[in-house]
View 1: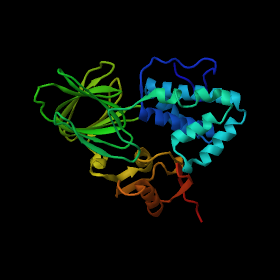
View 2: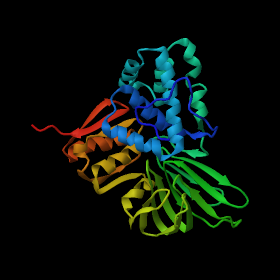
View 3: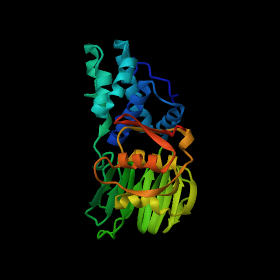
View 4: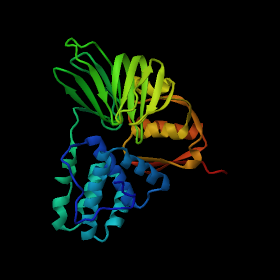
Length: 341
């Protein structure tokens, strides 16, 4: 069942919990959406994005439902909860997302402190085998010779046994460079939408809110859809978008989509909204943009290393495009049309 954006669970009845761990990256994203909803500053575009994220995977819906349930209990004890949420968001530059959530949920009556993050929130998340924080990139050599690169805010599990090698992409984006396994075990990459079976290959795969994107640089990759539709093979030099049912699009490989593997952010006549969505994956907090700037085009390249690299990228947009950057807090930035005159 899909909940509307404004629907909250009855605080007397916690959402069903099947006991499965939820990825740390999913919990972090749920916290982001919960804090934004509670602030009273959520836009129509944000609501659509939240709805898409909530519906993209059952874990997303469950994590957000649990936080909403906790928030309802707190609000029952503290009539000032909405004002507290707004005030907390404006002070977000001085606290992390988990600390923000703790402030929001723990400032109520002492009798409700048992609900305060300590058990409920941490029970949602089990550490991934491999992960990156927002803005972090990692390169890992696995024991079987496979090379992995993890993009920002990514979580991966390894499921290796004597019969098979499975890499489970919980959240984010990875690049995989395969190697022959001395034990002859087949390799597959499990995503929310499909199982990917590489054929002597180098490729990258990204999970977005409502679909996944695959780019193949060498070899080929077979896509086996979750809903068991006909499989699709993506060859070297191609990229594809797909969901759990089918292939949505197949095009030539866009070289800029894997520039992150070299520590770069690259745009070649790219729509600004698409570019900003990629920037958002490399920074903590909330990055918003006005619909009026979405269709602008941007070309350039920027390094993803150094101190606050995405701040540098955003600042450069003001010099290149008719936009202005509005920084509400360190964790809340908006890209708006530049005022005329």
